[in-house]
Image (cartoon, rainbow, N blue to C red; front, side, top):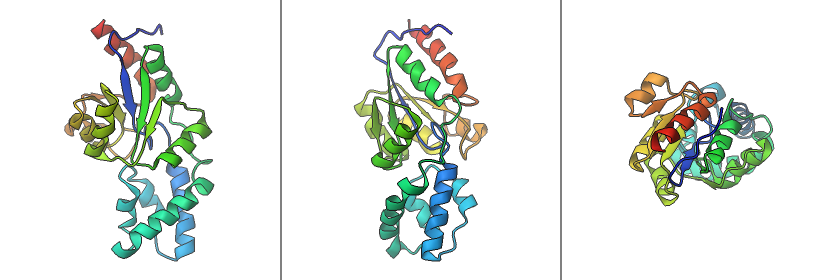
Length: 211
């Protein structure tokens, strides 16, 4: 498909987990290692079925409040060893970033994951956005989206829809994570695509409408 340049300066934000990358294998491996080290029962299949919110929210299901901060720091210290290599790119992820660039725009990643691990995932997969902003969740993502002037935010979670709406950005959703297409629409997503492989065609139409 021939790309259409957007007439305005285009900035598109993307979520990371279950939008650009399938982090389930890596996160499961890291939580299994954490379970083995601590002896705490953790249902790792349940953990990876609800990715999206910050790590501390997930740990609160398994650890007492007094241990969450230290456990989160320990988990993050383990993360690079267990979670990066097993986690592949989602179908269409590289092409989605390339489509934004072909339209004359910039692509940023805004994620609840911490910046260093987010960058490690992207570097490992050869995905090179223009900026990576971490440790932001739901409405908190609006902070970075507004700062970078993002017109569009792409994500897989209800929290991503809320973040886009809080930033007055168009919410483009993909049901590739824990939330169904119907749930994403009900939360206020403006556009729901089957997955990122449909994003370049959608973006071409978005830009043509503004030409």
